Length: 490
Image (tube, rainbow, N blue to C red; front, side):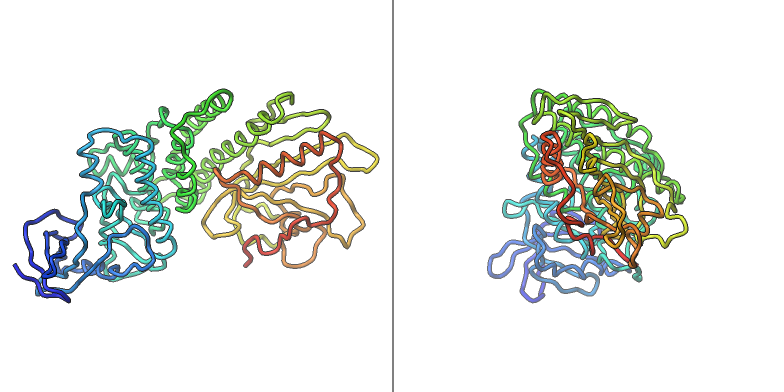
């Protein structure tokens, strides 16, 4: 069969079927081999043609020609070597850690470039193709531009049950977090050889994605299992951004940790397993209270990793320090007469701001970190910072942020802690207000991202070392770092 588009193509045998069309082998008069996808002219099917040009997006199967016949739209693409599904069927078992990370990194690169532009909405091994040595994303048949909210036919209810995020089952708007969830399912499948949720029918898949927890990946590096668990959070807002996923994949090593770090990771994994048993808060038609509960569970897991990473680094650097358990999951470390402490997580009320104008962002939970010194002639007892789980920088994107506060320099009042933490409340609302008040921000809202904590750890280790040696004092100027512009305003 001959096909005249921008080029002339000769069609051969069928080689597969996409989400909304049949695929045939094709060859141009120049001898170029390709694949021709025929998309029936049904309502909504032409949406795939909206995505034939994805300039600047890495690891996407390109469209080299397109057109239509009386009954179908046609897309011509390079012929891939195989799909990820075919490759998994050939291997018939889990892939190695190194190979899994390489495949996931290729897909994550694509999601990084698509973030804010296009949501694929149907990410699965069948739509990941091996092309020129890279695993590339194809089949944008039910994709949508990230800012699109309505369309004549968006294929809203088309989904692949084993890979569909909770928000798809609730018929909510898909975002890049939806694709991150599907990537988490693929990651689980690559390293374990099985889906995290096995169905088998639509009702079972729906219930499992909305309410169930997958079996933990206990035989894999903690860095990988933690990343997969975060991608599979029920609350879309708590999942990592594609850029964070890609950065953390780059840091995953096949070499297992040893000694104290290995024991700490095992202890942390056991704690994550215990806590995740309660992450069953979401259901169709969830309430605001249930939304906050789901985010609180994600906040608790994330803070545990941040806290454990800092504590392990401090203990390794100062093994003679004394470690004590605090309230809940909090802890303190004492070296000489200096004390570094991390508090446990506290749920934040939905409206904690008292009678003052609330900030533009939402706070789900809070904690604190600080260093205390024995009182001295300088009337300085140390410093403390607030840790808030909030969407301070990007609406709907929740993460832990570090900040701190101070008294207005127009006031004579001076604290013995400088700067100091505040819980979400009327005092901190005044500090974040656009006008002048007694309290002000003294530190920018600084995201704390698991896998990217080097600066956070080094900074607190330096302050702790100064405190242990009697050199920690009032900052030379306040605020130490410019806080303005680090949080959203109305």
